[in-house]
Length: 445
Ligand SMILES: [Ca+2]
Ligand SMILES: [Ca+2]
Ligand SMILES: [Ca+2]
Image 1 (cartoon, rainbow, N blue to C red):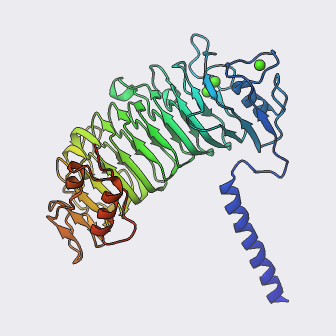
Image 2: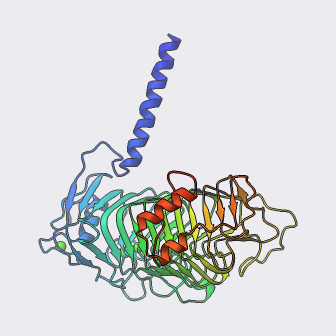
């Protein structure tokens, strides 16, 4: 009897885990109610009664579970909004004097109930903020939103401070989840160009404590005071995606991770991002960040710290770099990776005497040809830890495993100057890093 009870418990646990897995694969399907497809029928930004269903009206129908003009009534938390090909330009601006409208009537599109928004492809369905506000906002807790097959561009928060000026393309708060699949987030901005304490964060995306997932997506050409591409204050997962050519007036041009949650980035590129101060590609301040099969290349931190990666300890921090390439980044100090404690512009406290707990580990990875040094650290931080099979084109990274190669040119640059096809660069990286699955490396500037 006890064995049967144990079996029942085991089966229930297994089904529970399966259910959890299915839930995360299809996060909008929270309840058993049948999904309602709400079809958008006009590209015009409207909230009226003209026999058409705009994107704003479709979101309103999903938010309220009532019919809105020609949009079908939503039904609970598993509605799907279908957005056909077209250029959807936001035009209903907030009234003068309104900083943050959260009822979906004007300005940004406020999503107040879990929903999936499905476009026709990044080249077909363009959702354009038209410079009047950010584009998508999850201002209330517990919304799970999936967006796929669209481009989100042209969000602009104007000039001001606070979270109301963060997240040019997307903004979500604690308790929310946002998953982007096959989405291009481009040419959005969050209050750049302001004094350092009144700049916005997250030109593309601002995750204020929620769960953000990017898969098969690109975040490019966005700009903010901090976190030009992504400002992440919660959990972050990036798979098969690119963070390219974003800019920050100050820290973290590609991605800022602030807080103690974990970050996992796999099979992705973080390249050509330019920071006005520290952290060209990645600025990491806490939690555990795992980089696997990631290329971090051609990022810049001007004359400051950490062209590729800037790790700064505000709490326990670990950065695990595996099968990754950190190449041709640029900074004044620590062009590839810089590990800091209590240094830089905003760190006013006294530097600790003993090394800190945070660690940066590398294995099967290449750190090469970074201007300002491949690796660097302040004296109070722990040494870089090699777990073997790394290449350092100089001798900056303190690699001491028997299988490491220091002062070794991985010859990625030679491939670039010879304009060797990308596939050959990839294969060369595979050979040099001694494993089958080295990161894809770009052959050209
Ligand atoms: Ca209408
Ligand atoms: Ca809003
Ligand atoms: Ca709004």
